[in-house]
Length: 136
Image (cartoon, rainbow, N blue to C red):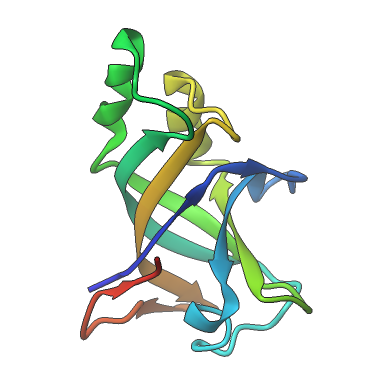
């Protein structure tokens, strides 16, 4: 049972060796608050792509190939912030090739993902193992 989120892919600042700067926003209460994660650190989260949509309109013919990414495993780098109500869920450098190959551009697409596992130090925790938590 995972945490399911959906949001616009946005572009920020990359962190070499960690992530490419493309992220989804996650309300703090669902991850950093519940798992008591420290700000200004990076955490690895494993997940899966559930859906992809255009921000405006429907997919055109060539864009229909984007549906092939549904079901793909993905790695995120999670970065809690010190202040504010949203944290950053960055696409890791390891998973970026999938987005680059399909031409999934920040600002143009909405991604729906399920977040399954959080690596915390040497321990891996299941995210909400007893039920699906869906952020709308």
